[in-house]
Length: 267
Image (tube, rainbow, N blue to C red; front, side):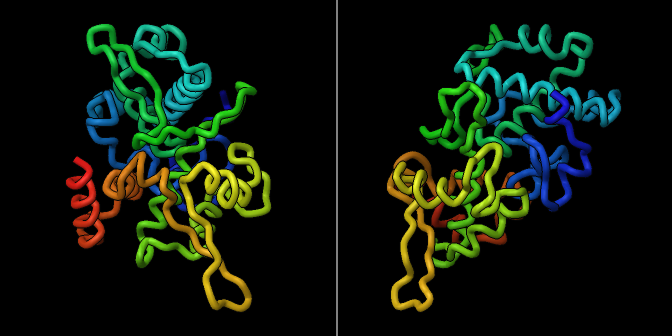
């Protein structure tokens, strides 16, 4: 499980990352990022007393080990329970379960785009599902692939921040490149990113990729596809983006207002 372990400073620095649990896709999904909302995280966000009693490096190792265990369960589509996590991962650190589990859930959501949802409070059992109501996870039948909704949500969020919700292709590639996702370069999670963005996710209906008219040389741009509009909302994606980045919602008043309006219409 050592490939999932990274120093806390690396998780928070906005530099190109290496390894499966990369620097957060939005630049702030490290240990100090805001905790997921109560609707998506089954654990309360504040466990400073627990955290202070365990060295930060040890806490990072435990979190990474638990993330790898959760990814295994996600691949096999199996529910998980607290007892199993304690016995398999945190046997010698049971008292630190709340903080380790909270941070592992945060990593699953912000890096891999997977929510850990509680289904039975009495038995402390959970299921793992793609974030924001998305039905797609990009998992293959080989049992070794990684969930891909994290990158998809990142792209949907980037498109929201552009004028008229249309993102020039060069802008879209800017943020993923900071975490090692570059067009034309094979990625251990996403394969060939250009094919994923311009073909797979277009065919799945999550993105629209079109040529800008009257441009020479030719330029392209991305929009939300119909499946993205059907499965999630602007407000859900914006909330995810703000939580991951630590940005102040007041910096995007018109977008927040439109997101709330969209959700109200949907309701």
